[in-house]
Length: 72
Image (cartoon, rainbow, N blue to C red; front, side, top):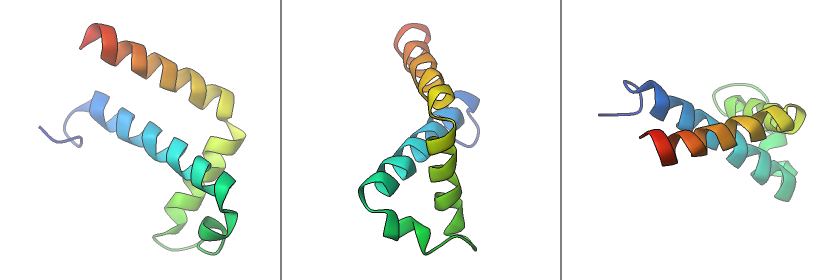
C-alpha cells in the first residue's frame, strides 16, 4: 500500500518532508531561497513551516514516532 492511500503513512511523509527541508535550509539556505515560486517552492514553504512552527512540528514528530512504535 502506498503512502497516498494510508493516512498515517501520508502524515509521516509530510512530517519528514518538513523536517528535512528545515534542516537543509539551516545548513545551506541558498539552495531553497532561490526557488520561492513554482513547483520547487513547495520545499521552501515546508522549510518555513519547519522553522516557524518548530515546537508544534517537534510534538507531531514525537507523537508520530510513538504511534509507529507502539500502535502499528
